[in-house]
Image 1: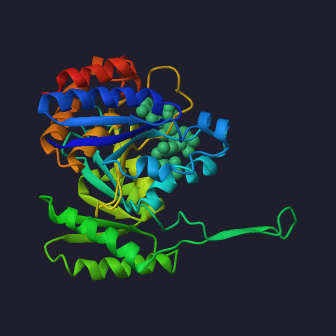
Image 2: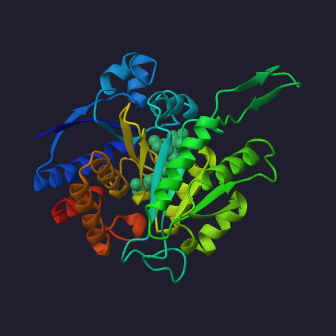
Image 3: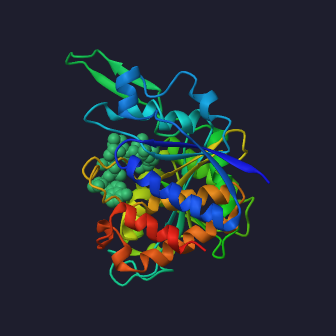
Length: 355
Ligand code: NAD
Ligand code: IPM
Ligand code: MN
């Protein structure tokens, strides 16, 4: 039987609080379903590591985690100690780029019993996937600062869209749409104002759509798309967008399902040349870190996505089912969902419900 080797990186803030719950639930599901998981723990990608070593990760980070079957990640960023762009470009964004994890896959689902902030919305009304381009686009290192500290000072940062990069994320999104009952894809764009890169994206969508005649598709400018997320979340099935637009939509979508604290994600290298990273959508939440009140469901659900990615579909689904049963009980929910369970109580509840 195959043993999966998982690199575990809790990172900063509530990353350290939600990861033990994610591991607790993974262990419960692995035991129930006869899956063998081996965890290797790493302390880098945290402000403490940075303070000791002057960098976010060891020089040989790729050797340390590049051979694992998957990487299970908490969150990174502690702006009181390190500027965010330094810690993020020194860790998470490096994983995404150097491991060519060009898909950031982020499900958005209203769970039974959980109140949506959108009045009258029931489970089933909000059930879609955000497919975010994860290696290029607006997150670019092309640009710079000229004439610093003078009144001629200016800064630029160019959006980079490569044909390969745009086509591969669109192909992934169309394939996902094709596999779903609704077979519907929405493209997020802004080709009225951003007049070179966004029309290019639209053009590639049109070309890719021809290869997927069974998929119905539409496109919206990002401004009205955000409005429609709130007004008509039931319109969406698979929503594909550039790095920045996908980032924004994958906080807004989960907010419409009650909290960003339950949202999971996979940073996926579909070819399997490199390990994929599974992590909650949320960050290190300095405002609540250390209080033991963080919602662990985002991390736990990310663990389920990791098992599914590894091919352990039954074990993965058992976790998602346990999450649904847990969230259905108000007293087992954390504070962000109107409950009074702490992080550990919520994690234990999910682990107990796994079957
Ligand atoms: P955040 O996601 O950390 O927090 C936003 C708000 O949501 C906060 O009020 C927080 O308390 C709340 N929240 C987040 N997760 C929650 C949970 N599990 N349970 C309950 N409430 C939760 O975003 P931010 O405040 O913009 O960023 C904080 C730090 O995290 C920054 O350093 C940022 O760069 C970093 N960040 C990292 C990641 C990542 O590692 N993938 C993602 C987003 C932000
Ligand atoms: C996310 C985060 C990151 C992103 C930040 C922390 C760089 O917001 O994973 O959604 O923008 O990708
Ligand atoms: Mn984000």
